[in-house]
Length: 244
Image (cartoon, rainbow, N blue to C red):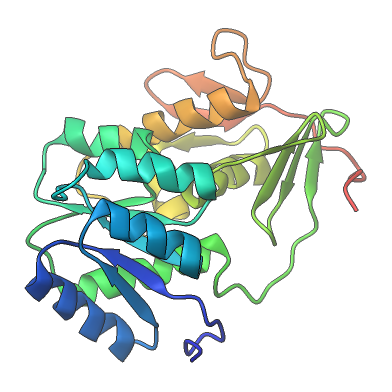
């Protein structure tokens, strides 16, 4: 069975509340997505390996293991988008979730219709529903290459595994070198809608990006911080990309 968007891969719902999991399943399948459910971390890992999901909806409070640990295991296996679903609502807890590689964070209780919108928006950003094609962007003599079609990144010829949200933030910065972006502007461009008052999550994403591409924040080559303002990209665009 294929989703309406033309792919057979499912959305993995990791939720031990059977009633809530069923509600999510009904709404997502009503929107045209195939779903797979898991009530424990062990079931989720098995389903992840078997199904290769499009996206994961991850409850952080599971009976057999912390959701944060499960997110780290998923990240070892690939760059599948992750939406964390939890009752934890503090800003620090949300920032910690993004630091672990989450692409979005939804606090219970929530609207299933809004969650479907977030899923659709995240898959669109991650390339699951992309129809356009972009040439790879190359900077500093091929030191950093970004492929907007495949959402792939290379640093010094080696692949760099960014989450879809991290990639979108980096691509947004790189697409307009020297432009200064506020945190709010980056959130809106990278996530497609406004978060509710926690733009510090951008700092967590930028920190992850810098670590992954080896950009020293004290002597940045690519991402510069303008304190009190935001960020800008300082890499120099190459005329041709060395990536085939």
